[in-house]
Length: 497
Image (cartoon, rainbow, N blue to C red; front, side):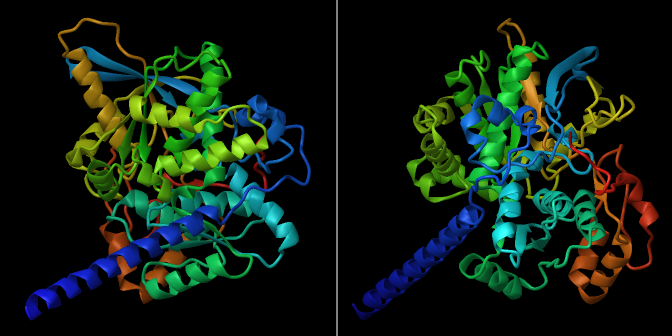
């Protein structure tokens, strides 16, 4: 009997500890989500009228929600042919929403995510000039690069925290090199976990410091992504592409997919005549997130309202805010219904693989980048000579691309004759890999000299694309082995008009 009581007490204690840890994690995630709050703009430049699709359709937000035009919009829509996808002479056809071309200094989906966040930070600095700003992510984080680059252009000095190393990959190493090239005041690596956690908790609890959470996932980021779907509806209405049947994108923090879901139901409410039969296919890039969806229904169950990692959480927060500001409808029930009936979450563990790098399936799909035939207008900031092949990185973009190829092949081999579906790939990885004014190579050499784990991580990173060959060899290599993959950018001369 004593042994039974002892075992029962031990299990109860362990369960209590597990619940406490889970509660602390949720508190931390919620605190990061709420760190950067919506603020009204000090002034409203006229140019915002044409650069923000969200403001074009919800003009009452213009005087209530700070915004800064970080990118050049609308991003173009390209048509792509995939030669011999399903057999000799049998080509696949898709459309690509070129979010990767949204900015000449650093594009991708984080540009929309940051438009309201950085604007709120600028307003925050006016009343709290001693404020600092932290961006958190993993070793290959695109969010950290975007926050540092675009923040610097606006006078917001962002301190990137790299909380964990991703699987070694040259694409991830390049993001670290980009960060170093802009010489942020503080850059923390995963080699100091306790100091990183202490600084993060202190920032969330005390003082005026603000935190950009993983993937930029907060309500302001979701609002930015809603604008992306409204912009797509305008492009469909203008005849730039037919109405979309299936849209593919990666899922990291869930910020982008949450905004796209809300954008669909808002566009329908506004009678924008788009997305009549749309399905969204999301591919989690982290196997743990996929496992939580498979076992616990993270994305669709009501308990997701407790976790910022679930679209349910962001849907409610954005819907409540929009209604408070004057929207004449509660979007939450519409968005939840769309999530349940029109969103497919890919849970194929072989396709998802490890976080931060290619799976075997995504690597095979990404090999099509060397033969992909892409046609469409160049972004307004570039010329027609810009190389148009998207960057199918193993961290994010290649995984939904692989799922899309699987679906095209299945459709081709189906015995049911029907018109091919219109498929749109939401390209989230920036085409530009920015290089700032600082000597990023020497800074990496200096970091590696005191942090062997960083040196080993960088040296093990390999290139997987035929179009983007490069490597890093510390400490005796040279920047010539990778700098051809980077684009020198001058923030002083960039104008997003």
